[in-house]
Length: 146
Image (cartoon, rainbow, N blue to C red; front, side):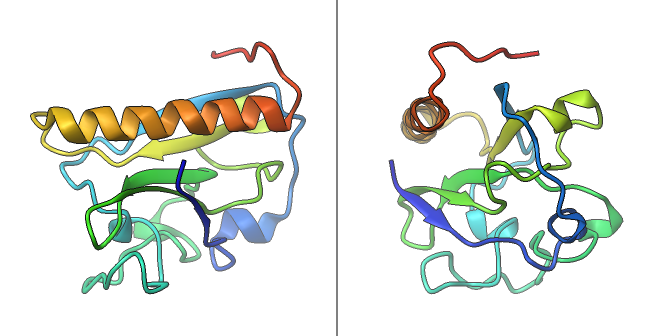
């Protein structure tokens, strides 16, 4: 796993400062044909690459929305796959619009065109390793997926 950290201190979710009792993991997809982490994670840390639109989610309400997962998985500027943790794991994220925000760690997988098997295989491997890491971190042998 290629785990990096860039905490979204400017996002309203981070500023809310709430915590959770971890009960599970929720996996999301960005649902957009853009596998680059720099679209969502910023500012550039020298690994992400420059986002010319400056529309990353380390803003109070990105795109005018109250959204923020715990992490993103996708491509760095050199094309390698990484996980970027953007909230502390026990921080209450804004990822599902429901009660699972109070209990689940969430991460987004940056989608591509859904035609690149190599990309799918790499992000899937990264996601599995992240889930194993989180289960080990919280002593879980089974985590509920709503």
